[in-house]
Image 1 (spheres, rainbow, N blue to C red):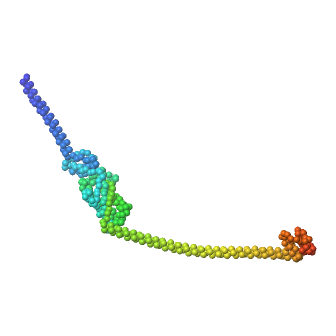
Image 2: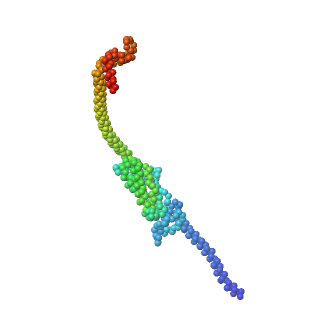
Image 3: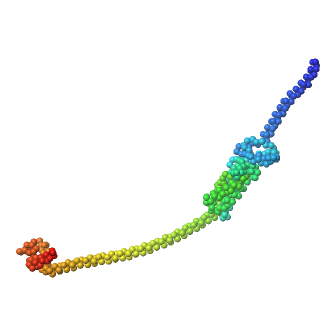
Length: 371
């Protein structure tokens, strides 16, 4: 019995020992496999940096091509030969057209803009832009996937495309100005704004947002400056001559109005003098008429008085009249000697001078007049 039991328990013990030996090996293999997968993921995965978004491209399969949905900053998986991620920056960027390429090595040089009058203006300009984070058909702009698909996936391709688009649009817009128009800030800024709007509309479907177009400097070549100076001088001389001509015409009008005014004043003065003489003559005539009428009335009154006097004298006699007149003289006497006559008794004077008959006639006339 003991021998038999020993022979049965032997194989069982060996199987348990074998299973116990496989478990650690399996665990080690799983750990190594996980470590390998993690290592491959870190080696072939992609990190989208902060300030950028990622665009995944699938090389083959059901989702082959660029994925429209952008990847946020962070770690994202990739499989070599199957998946690739392109980062697209989200910060504001600049395309420079600057004549000083030594200080600004990324510059594309100044833009030579032809004007309508056949000259050339050198301008320095900067275009501020950024890339849209996502496409939005409602807003009318594309996204990073459209940028990579239609322009390219590298910074060099983007800059080259933007520089060419800006060059064409700025020359087209600013080329509608004359050389002199560049001196007008309002006209110049209107054309810059037109170029900015045109660039914004043409680049938005590619996922590019134009923030601003800044015209920093514009210069003319030396011979152009001289030509502009001469042309401006000619225009100023022409304007001066025109103003001088207008002034001379206005002066002639003023002189004519002044002469006409002097003639009118003289005519009015003569007319006024004539009217005054006429009025004065009429006044003198009226005065003479009134004086003549007054003299006539006085003469008539004197004639009436003389007539009445004559009538009286015809009745009382001239001696009575003389006596009456003498009484008036006697009233003025201040001294002297008159014999046998009371100087205050007028009747006695009348009797003395006119006699008794004269005094009677005078009393008779006075009585008749009293009746």
